[in-house]
Image (cartoon, rainbow, N blue to C red):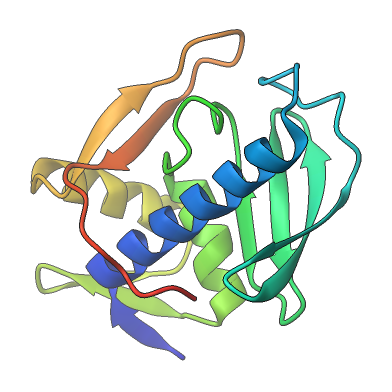
Length: 152
């Protein structure tokens, strides 16, 4: 895969991350919901696929056998579908996507370009900015409205 619809991929990413985070939280029920220090690295199943998970800093990275990577970062317990340009960059890079298109503009899959894309999607009403609470306040984006996306 080299280039695709940014809107579709962002919705797919937010949905996948939300499912993984909820599965993680339901499975382990962590007491520490900011850094997950009470959770060991391990595996979980989502939509028939095995995902490894590794705790880091203020989040958890999920990796599927094929190398698909979802790095749920700060505030994942507060905003399971919360995304930012850096997390989107990691996901798209793991899929092998080189560029995406949104509203007739091509964005290369680079962190600074994904930050621009997030801002444009917010201006267009597709995303809405949110700010996490707690020790690791961070600006994230959520989908402005829920819409079904096929599982991957």
